[in-house]
Each structure stands twice: as C-alpha cells, then as structure tokens.
Amino acid sequence: MYGATNCFENTKLQITCLDKTKMKFWWKLLLFVITIELIDKNCHGKADLSKNSGQSKGENGACKYDIIFLLDMSSSVGPSGFEKAKDYVIETININELNYYPTQIGIITFSQDANMDIPLKQYKEKDKLIEAIRNIQWKGGVTNTLKGLNLLRLQGFTEENRYGEKITKIGIVVTDGKCTHPVATNAEAERVESNGIRLYSKGIGDDFDEEGLRNIGRLVPGTDCF
Figure (cartoon, rainbow, N blue to C red):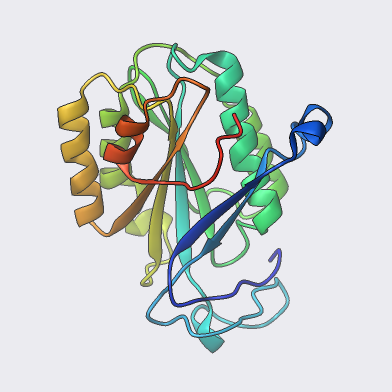
C-alpha cells in the first residue's frame, strides 16, 4: 500500500551511510539507506502493490517477503544504542517503503529473555507500526541471542501471522555480537537457516564483536553507522 518493488536474480542488502558532515544534523532522520532486493520463484518483474492497484498476491511477478528484526536490548548495548537500533528499523521501513502489502514487518527484542513485541500481520498501517516500535522500552540484562533466535524459529513465521503463501523469510539481528552462549547460539542460528529463514546481522556501537555477528548470519555490508 506504500509503493512497488522490483525483483532481481540475487539477494543483496546494500547500505549507504551519510556523509560525516551531515550526520550531526540528519542522523535522527536518516542513519543509512538499506536496499533489499530479493529473489522468489514467483518473482519475475515489477508489480504495483499499491493499496488500490487491484492486484492480488503473486500476480504479475509480485515479490513476497516478510522481515523480522531482532533487537538487542542488553546492558552492553545500553538505552542509547537501543534507540539507535530502533531508528535503524524505522528508517529502513521509511526509505524502502516497507510494510506495504504483501510485505510484513515484525519485531523481536531480547536480553535475558526474548519477546515478540510486534508479530507479523499485527500492523497494516506504517504510521501505527512505527509508533509501536518507538514505544518499545529498553530493559537491560545479558545478551541472550539464543532465546531471540529460538523465538524467531518457533514463533516468527507461523501460519497464524502470515498469509500462508510461499514467502521469503528474513531475520535481521541488530546486536553487539557478544552473546552469552556462543556455541548454542551458533547452533540455533543454523537451525533457523535450515528452517528456510535467511539470517542477517548488523552491529551496534564501535565495539561490536564481528566474529560473533558472522556466526549469527550474513553481515549487512557497509560501514557501521551506529
């Protein structure tokens, strides 16, 4: 309902950071641009997915994908880092016109425990989705990425919160990479991928663990803007 999308032959996440001279003024409005170009077996061209287009799911090569962001709200990230992580999600939605039909956005937060703050299919209006993201409060605690990934695998992409079609499933973990159970976390990340969920990771702060991020999923390329 917010625009149209294009499909290409490969999957690519591309980020462009703002020039340093502009960051001080614009960072709250635009941390960076993320472009997601996804392949789907039923995805062969351009589709008008606007609210009044009259197209149904899958017609004219419409791309179909759902994205769940997993946000680290641990003490090592801190309240400031968590706010910037939320900014990342919101600007990603705004710039790429995500959450328009049939794309859905969900949010999982994790620290000591994990919580499905925003299930897929809960919000169909972008403004309400963004307001709900803004209202998520930082909690602190350890970085239990394992529980976040487990929740993603078991409850993230269920028939109850999806449209029931063949949809590309994407999980983007925004964290400092310093998980409390690295071996078990890596094993859970492999289980998530084996369930058909494509995992990506994005670092928070200047001191994130890059190896830890790589063990979780494909690194979102580009210079870290947090």
